[in-house]
Image (cartoon, rainbow, N blue to C red):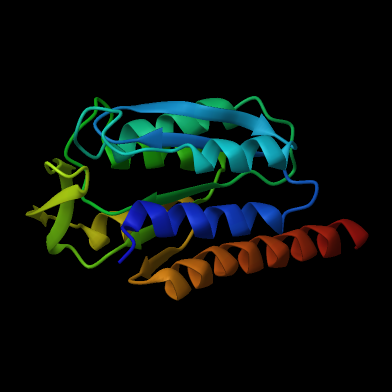
Length: 195
């Protein structure tokens, strides 16, 4: 009964709640992309920002390349030892000025791994169209194209990984796998420094 955005917001809030000493930021995107929250340690504020996310605020579309470039711009000057981008999307790139593969090349040059999570199965899905006479959300069937190959290529070229989430549990699992991968890389860095 809950839409993809509602589930993603719940899972992201839970994800944020389990972080300690990680600066997190949030870039939102549809047909355009912008920074919703800059890198911060204030998880309370970040969770409130996630809670306030709404659909239909930005122009329609899926600007994956623009979203990645905005995130990279935020991370470019960060002195953090570990910098990563996690892209969560439910569609194929069909908007924006920067191609996803060009943005991935930028990430590769900056040595920032990109983890991609495709939410949903694509095809015909219910999509909110507004409200009916009684104030209830009106839905219509809409074709949502997906491109898992693009997301796989972006992740692989940058040293990240691709995950597919078809429900709440698999989205949580994908985010957990990102964290596990980061923890492994921190251990490897620590081990290399000890030698």
